[in-house]
Length: 190
Image (cartoon, rainbow, N blue to C red):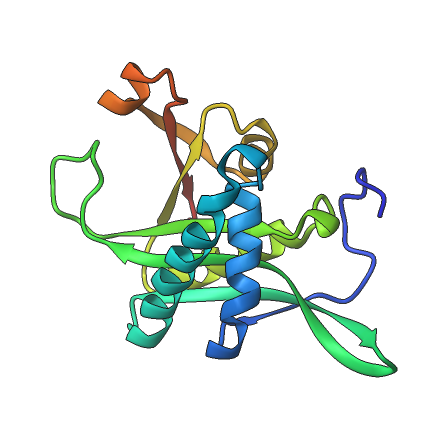
């Protein structure tokens, strides 16, 4: 794979996640947000199980205020055509932003993750577009997400897609343990 490609060189299908996707979703999210390290090798199965159960709970809830999208590409496996899951993103309606003075609901994106072999090929952009269309269908004029201040590739993706910094969020944990702050990004959809 050419890491400098910005557009997908294969057909990508964006669809809603299904229960049968749980194992692949868990692997992509776990490896994207918590790359395996020898120092915590023994905790990795517990981490994956926790992520699996969180996803399973959200998918089973069938809430009209939550969608999990997946990106798939066609592949041949043992001469059989299959669809390989290569990315995911979640969108939900949340009730209050920390920087607002009211309890107005808002559309919130989380867990955007792309398989490492398929990054920088436009798949994340397609998943973001699906979330933005959903937010508009839900009647929202803005969409929000968080990204860590040291996640420069993700910040670049969001900036080039119209997301702007609304607030830096520090926690006592980030301050005490010198962890990166969270950046709240917002995009106007109108």
